[in-house]
Length: 219
Image (tube, rainbow, N blue to C red; front, side, top):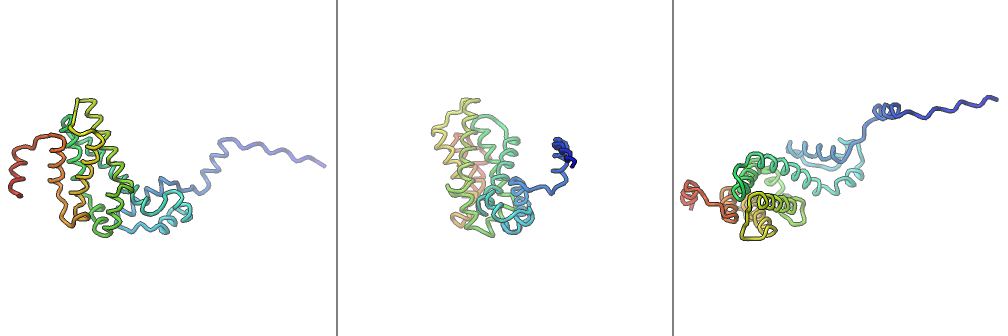
């Protein structure tokens, strides 16, 4: 009776080729990308629909993202990070003036971002929880980003605000929320100009005469 020949162990190339031929498995980052596309298109972010599109079970999707609310929070934060990067690249000046300019550009980007305004209009309760709650993903990260920006400019330019950086970062973000999402919080129309004006005062950046005249006309 002949002894069967021992099969050679697959080479790394053979293993890689075998993996390439199999159906690729989705990843948590692909779930985020798919959720971004749905949210941007104004479609409801349904977990069952998303799981089927990714060819994974709902249990797998939930294990990746936590729940629908947390996933929407990550979608919003992913756009916020892009907006912050764009604002930083566009902003001019140094020290307090630079910080104000970063937030000026960022707040205007948010105010003019149609998917965000649509989300706020269609689901105000959910939007309020995700965007402005201390338990949501957005507020604490924005405060941390603001604090890091203040610390960076303090080290680079000697910026020395009257408030400690933790308190100042918190107040700046809460002010921005109050005016940018005032339709959610108070029922009033968002006032981007007022938000920027308050941030200027907090950082001791003088308002230009043109801005002061415009403010006086609004009162």
